[in-house]
Structures are given as C-alpha cells and as structure tokens.
Image (cartoon, rainbow over all chains, first blue to last red):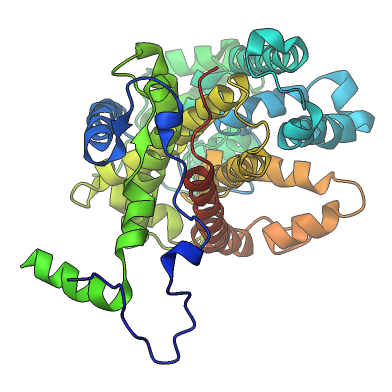
Length: 259
Length: 224
C-alpha cells in the first residue's frame, strides 16, 4: 500500500511530486565520521535511563527536604529582612554596594544587569570568529569566566551576610496561643502602663517580642529578665517600682494557655 | 491493530514524514556519553526539558488546590502541604524543580557557550535560548509569591521596587505587575498567578517549539 502517496485531496494545493519539493529532512549526521547511533530507539533509551537516574535524585531531594512554608504574609510587619530566591541573590547583593545603590541605584538595578543580559543575547554577533574552541577565543571565554566568578562571589557574599536562622525563626508559623485573663486586674493594669505591652502584645500574644503565655519561668526569673534583658530583648526598660514589677511578674506566671 | 490504525491515519494525512522529522535521525559520536563520558555535558539541555515537563505536570496538579486570593492562598498551600495525599511530594517537586531547572538551564547555557555552538548558523537559536532563560527567571520570580508567606511577600516587594527603579517607565512596570501604584496586595497576587500560569507558559511553549524546530532543522553542532 502507498502510505499517503498518490492520495487525491479535494482542491489539492500540495506539491505532489516529491522530487520537486525542497528537502525538509535534517542533515544526516554521518557527515561526522565516527560511531553514530540512531536516535530512535537506541539513543532515546539511553536518554531515558539518564532521565530515570536524575529523577531518583530529584525525588530523594523532594522527600528529604519538604518545601518550606513560612507564616502567612503580613504586609504590616516591617521587621522581616527580605531575601529573594537563591538565583537572584547575586543581583540583590550587587544593590548593596555603594556604587550600585542609593543615587547610583540605576547602575546596579538596570545598567549592569542590562549590559550583561544584552551581551549574552547578542553574543553571536559580538564573537563572530569561526573559531569554536574556548581556548582559541580568549576574550569571550575570559568575559564569561569573569561573569561566572562575580556571580559566585556575590551569591556567596549574600549568603554569609544574611542571618538565615533569625529569618527562619522570624518567619516560622506561629501557634495561635491565647489566654484568658482579667483585664481589670491589677497585674494587667501594670502591664498596660508598662512598655512591655509594645512588644509582647495586648493579649500577651507576642509581636516583636515572644508571647508571654505559658512561660517556664518563676516570678523572680521574670523580674531578672526585665532587668537584664534576654536575647533580642533589651534590659532595664521597666520604669515602675520594684514592687510593681514583682506584682507584674507574678501576674505573668499565672498566664497559662487555655486548654 | 495499532498498525492498522496507523495505516488508516497515514493514508489520509501522510503523517510518516512528520514522525521521521522528529525521531528518525542519527546521533553523532561526539555527543554520546556512551562513547565519550565527557559528552554528558550534552545532556543538560534534555534534562532542562525533562524538568520543564515535570514543572508543567506538577503545576497543573497544584492549581487543583491553589486559590489565588490573599485570604486563602496561604491556607490552600498549607492544606495542600499537610492534608492532601502526596500534596507534599507534588509541591516539593514543583519547589525543587524550580531551582533545578535554573541550574540545568545555566549548565546548558555554559555548554553551548564554551563549545561555541552559538556561532553561524545557530545565532537565532541562541537568542531564542536566552529568551527562554529570561522567561524561566520570570516564572521563578512570579511563582515565588504564590504561597503568600512572609518570604514570598517581601521578596516580591524588593523585586517590584527594583523594577520600579527603571528610568521613565519604572512606575508603569510597577503598576502593570502589582496592579496598583502603591499597594502590593490582592491585585498583585492575582496578576502574578495569571502571569505564572498563563502568560509566561504561553511564551515558553512558543519559544521552546522554536528552539526544538531549529535544532532539528540545523542539527547539533559538530565536534570541536
């Protein structure tokens, strides 16, 4: 049977004589001397095996490291130090340098990336020699290696200058903690009058500071923390009397999460 | 049976030449790792496409749960991650694939660059490839916002501020991306979703088709 050959189509506009058609099949690779291999099925099978090995590694990565999810976006929270995905870090780092930020922002944000991208896009017209070996084209090879080295350096600088642990801690999904307390109690009035409420929240739920619910401290320890500070919390910001501070500390120890 | 169906279609549409154009060609020795192990560098392009296919498939499944709305986006991702059967795997593949595709595409670009394969007659294919690179970075940037968590929002804020610093048209770019002159919010999320799942993939498909047609047309570059 002639597959498709000699079929008459109604209003056939095709050129039916194959010899008058321009040759559309790609070049035969036997022009390169050596052991060529048919794409289908021999080479495709090998590609498929490479793909399978790659997929195993990919799945191991996926299972070993579940994708991260921080707490829901809060546009009002200004304490978060933004950081882009890792492949944009070099650009982000570039913008931190004096010559590429502030009044020179346009240099770091537009001109330098624009030049780099433009050069990459137009490289066939910039490097027009017939030579293909990287060793015989010192300029293109040199520029590319320089660009690579700068990207690696900038990414590295960005990584070591970002406090990943603090960011992860800040972005962590917070358990909703709440507590029932008497808003008319003396303890709460002291709390409202103090500066503690600014960071620890109206209902002790935390904010800039940690939540004050279910703390594992005694009243004396809390008084001590108020004086000395702890972690990112500065000490000595309580302005009331020592007696009031003790009352407040006692009150805070009574804040246990609602069951 | 299958042969008969093939013959039936072929008799009417003459599909054999199409099939031969796609699959019937020879692979030269210098790109075949079975002959020279160092030829594994020629695998990077294929692996980039492989991950792209995985990204498309996993992304399609993610949209079955994802809600592009500031009230529900995070909740839907949290649900998908923690409640849906294999949701963690599908989201994980999309998350890690987004990074791997950049890595593989970068390696592929370096291979083409250092083997001088962009030279005549392959200039156009190189330029299409660089545009694919840009589209992929755009997909990475827009996809990063979608979970609507802290790092997503603030990374996007920074990115949009950078775009806004373009002279003359910066403000317009910002409005186009964010949906508002000032607010990064509900409009931004829906726009990024639309860009991520409709606009950029459409551009990507067109560019990939051009990339592959040109490869088949010109063949792979010869040995150095």
